[in-house]
Amino acid sequence: MTEVILSLKDVTVTVNKKQNNETRILKSINLDVHPGDFITILGSNGAGKSTVFNVISGTLPVDSGKILHAGQDISKESPEKRAKFLSRVFQDTKMGTSPRMTVAENLLLASKRGEKRSLAPRHMKAKINEFRHLASKMGNNLDHRLDTPTENLSGGQRQALSFLMATYKKPDVLLLDEHTAALDPKTSA
Ligand SMILES: Nc1ncnc2c1ncn2[C@@H]1O[C@H](COP(=O)(O)OP(=O)(O)O)[C@@H](O)[C@H]1O
Ligand SMILES: [Mg+2]
View 1 (cartoon, rainbow, N blue to C red):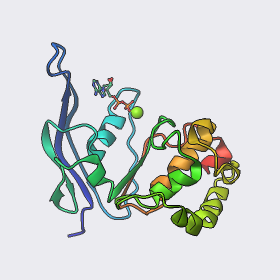
View 2: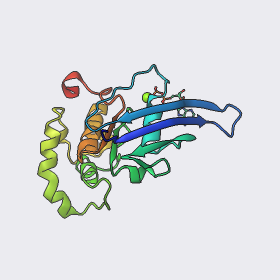
View 3: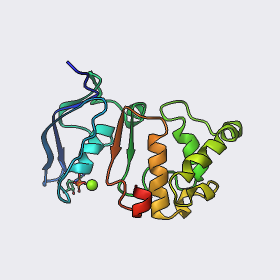
């Protein structure tokens, strides 16, 4: 039997339970992800694609069913704990980066995903050339914006940064939510 890295078992999500318009937005979702799998989720606007990512990353609780990582039930684990093995690029380019922090500082945080984080200047010094090299690969001038707060980047630059941050530590599971929506064709490639 091959290893299953991530598994959704009969995952159901209901929202607005306290109001009178209770809505089930996910109904018995089942999914097995094996190492190396590249899975595409298709659906019209409002179908529930981002909601699937919210329950996998833990920002939205499941009502019933389970989420397993390498066989372990993580349904009750915090998003911070799940960040040890999982990262995400959001559709909304304002999510996923810290707006007041610079590009380089965001990358430094990403290099410590799942660890105790600190932004000591000596850590930055050791990494800055690597960050510049990584950013230059995106081909959208991000390497000349290392000292710019991310709130002052273009949407496309922010999305490219978000992608670099999500992939820096090579997570077991990478969730890409319309991750090229803000990018021009060259940067998407
Ligand atoms: N926390 C929430 N509370 C209420 N409704 C929600 C919540 N999250 C998602 N929804 C609704 O669930 C449906 C699916 O949304 P979403 O997963 O964002 O769709 P998409 O497939 O476009 O990513 C939408 O109708 C949305 O309004
Ligand atoms: Mg969506």
